[in-house]
Length: 563
Image 1 (cartoon, rainbow, N blue to C red):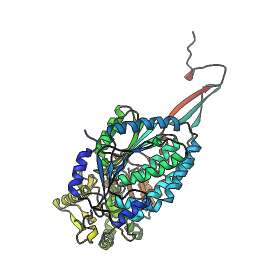
Image 2 (cartoon, helix red, strand yellow):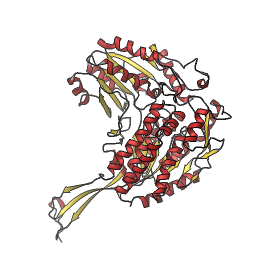
Image 3 (cartoon, rainbow, N blue to C red):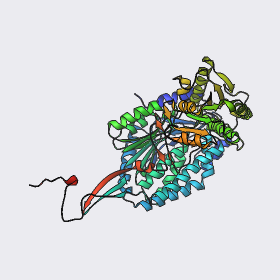
Image 4 (cartoon, rainbow, N blue to C red):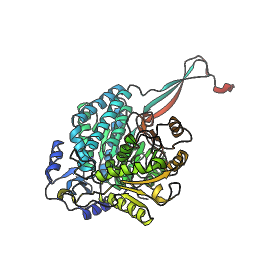
């Protein structure tokens, strides 16, 4: 079963949707020039393993706001992909012996280099991915933050001493570097997800090889240039942080390669498999759809590799009768509309207590009516485009299903019309609020299927237990949110009878996690954890070491085996 769409199919589909511009717009050329990305009509190298190269299929980077072709990038050929994996393994053999605090200092230098280009990189995220400017800059800041975290962590990746039952013995649990980490990442966070993995992986002494989404190659090129400059300055092989731009074939090769030690998959989207997976020649980290995650998990486990999965997120917000609506309404609004509904943690289901439902929906509809789509690079814009035409198709299918089943559409429900001339070829849709005809405790696909688009489905409840059951009734288990001022509600929500998701918030929206805590979900979301907390323990191999410093060699459990 193919993991990703083939490069040729991807190129053909894109070619039928967009007509390349003869020259870049001023807004695009200024951003690319600020990051030393050529704006001439040349093909950019999309492979880095200590040197830049690329001779495979050519991928086009398309601006989702305007439809213009930003650049053409040469992907990795099979030979170049193989070479990159080999060189990453060789680089790991050297890097694993660098003292951990020294590795942490290299991460600190990467942090400083990223921070010096925060605004420029953030603008590139907005230009190529489509999220609004403040979110683009915030994503780069997330990479900066995880570097801060990993720098400190490099001095605290500790094992432990375990008491032995045998006299004169001690047991040590020792972490050591794991190997090569394979990272496949998605379009919706083209910088931050890689940052989560790179920073922790480097601090742990690993090498990484990154295959980003084929629709956001420029973000990957810009970030890799920043990182490689720091590595070069410190005498570290560039293949410690290798990059391979490519499509399905590249993704499959990384997943299947026995030299990738950890594989990671994160984030949800029906088409995110096109976009992001994390790999270790020993492990693979994959962020993407549930269907692709199942395939990745089976393939990696079949070769006894390590896999970290971050998959679907069909997230719900519950608003109790005691909730402070002045806090809850803006949070739900951002959760449903932020990043045009393309976050793995976006709010997709809303459960309102009957006593406050009418007021809540009236005020929420007013906020939706105030939305005006715009250029994501303009600071006043709150609603940018969907990332691709494929995303618009997903939005259209979701709305069609709602209409077909008799749902009540309270807001939105169609693409935007009447846009300014420069944006008329962009992927703009009206964020939608709907009350489906079915209840959330059914297996109706309207409730159980994650739609990676700004569609918010609403239901009314009478008892908190009912809403919690609805929250838990879907296959996914990433994020959830309860709005209440009742301490009893909070205790129930975060306890054993409460939410079954990996992120369980109180008076905080489903979207917008910080790096200090481990990020990830349960059930079909994949059980993976990235970023903070104890997530670092997945990037090392563990050994239990029993040391005998006595003059005898007794066996455990009192076993006697004397000749």
